[in-house]
Image 1 (cartoon, rainbow, N blue to C red):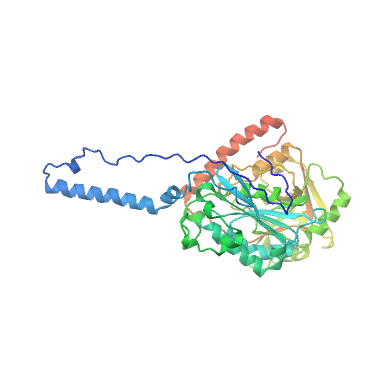
Image 2: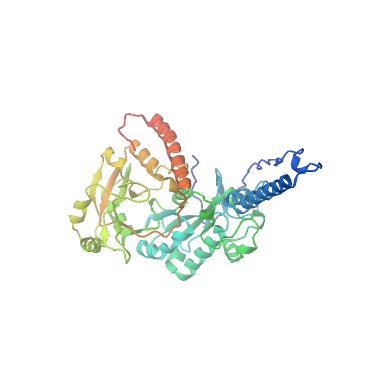
Amino acid sequence: METVADEDSSSMKKRKLSISPLTMVEAQHILPIHSTIFSSKRTSPLCAFASFIFIIYICGIGVYLWSSNFACRLRNFGDPSSIPLSNIAFDVEQRGRYIIIKNYIRSAIQPNKGNTMTLASAALFTDLSHLPEICGRWKGPVSISVYAPGSDFKTALKKIFSLRLANSCIHQNVTWHLFFDFEFSPSWDKFQSPEEEAGMSTAASGSYDVWIKGTFKSHGHLPFPANIGRNVAIRESKTDFVLVGDLNYYPSINIIPRFLELLKYQGPTGNRVYVLPVFKMAGYGKPPETKSELVQMTAEGNIVLPSGTEDCTQCNIFPNARKWLEVRSPDETLSVYYVSREKEELESWQPYYISTRDIPLFDEDQIKEGKFDRKLQLLELCLQHYEFHILDNAFLVQVQEVTETTKDVNVLQSFIHHNNLAREKKIEDLLCRYGSDTGCSI
């Protein structure tokens, strides 16, 4: 897997993508040339009527396919020639079927990597409403990759600029990367700066459809390749340490200065990650900012220990969770509550954690809707003998998601089937590389 190297923030590299033309498939005749329907011989009125109905039926199918999501996929393969990126002053990369524009919109403040750390995330533009609250709690650099295929690209840009104008924390701290499928990409021959792209009318674009309700992604039943976005957000961050999270998980306050102070006493991190326990809002309201507030809201029933998520069963239940709530220490301190070295705990646990930026990448064949999309990275951490240090006085709170998800059961099952097949192959590769007698499993 290719590793993206750090680049000077003031430089903009130009890369040329070489993409082979799409295969052109010659259309076949729907009906035989010598069909009796088009015979010049006299036919009975009944046969003529049946022939007429048959032709109407065939035409109806054609119109349906052309206007459906299936036709949407066929019509939006883009220009079959190579994408002309030689004159575009943005760092553009292709990974498989996806195109990534890295650092498309940069934060106003460049972080000092030794004095802070980065929150990295992959998101859809529908997730971005969480960002003002998260940025205010985090108070540090944020690196976000937004998946925006088709008309979602311009919609995402408009949302981003709206947030930047309305919120100084977002303007100063958040760097944006956008990515999308090659066949649902912008018009590269007219590609402009993010400000100009955001100001253009999506209705005037002929390269993709505009959806009045929902998103282009949902109408096209496209999967969310979150792991590609996570890897880009991590590799393009400028700090030594990162926290990879989802935008519906709010961090407690003052994590950055407390964690950096903790590192002074921890020594070299080595193969070690620092886990933030996860709790869940029982309803709506303001999530807690400190452990004292969390404990009080738990006693009142407003916060619960998660019993599962849409991704997996019991994946956010961390070891000794009940005892964690009973340990009381001053809110301004940060310490390690528990060190998990038991490999069995990772079988049902899918933690969020602070790590160094050179941590093993997430598997990019896994998609968000296919479930357990982060588990392969955890298996690799286990195989590399990582320790999971659970922090006290730092946590994440899961709030209600606003992301539009696929409701079609057959589509969801196909996503799950895809992840299962890809995961089985990758597990074999990892066990072959590290050995199968390590005791690690998922």
